[in-house]
Length: 252
Image (cartoon, rainbow, N blue to C red; front, side, top):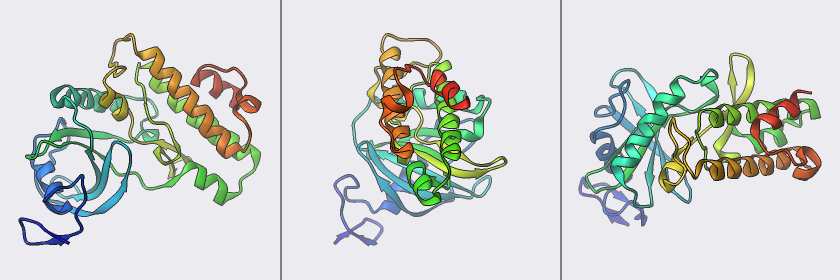
């Protein structure tokens, strides 16, 4: 058991250090965030941890400053060049707000650095079920699964058309949630992994690493789709090499 400076006791975790999650969350939100639509500086209530991945720990919080909204905050494990990373997240947030199918993408709110020099990312909370779990629990028809696969491919295609590499396409980063047109996929954690790596965080212009990043996205997408279609990637997608071609395949 560890005691925080605020007096609260908590179970110590390597990535949290001497502060409890509530204090670390507040410290993160007290830092400046790269957003022109959201000020996370005050009135954010920590709800609890959501999960832990290879790049960071994600917490769920409630913002009440301008409007009551659930947000997620990811504290990064890895050291990154903070200014470059925050600028990239700010650019991604702007790009995603202008996407034609915006409800299919988790909104990025901003990024910043805590007083203990941990970089964080704030995003809109998206309720839903991981796409593989959703497909298995719903026991939908082959047509239903193909529709979901096609919609997911179209989302990834839209990112690639704007030189955005997702960088971490996997089941828990694709949630199925109820929208205006029924259940559909929503991509989470868009561009964060690519921004951390820094080699193909491309912005508006292609970079030498962009093609490699897109190729990795397509391979990950093939693997994910084959999982919930329960068929080998070659049986479903053959030698298809782009998300757009995959989307067209599922529209047939």
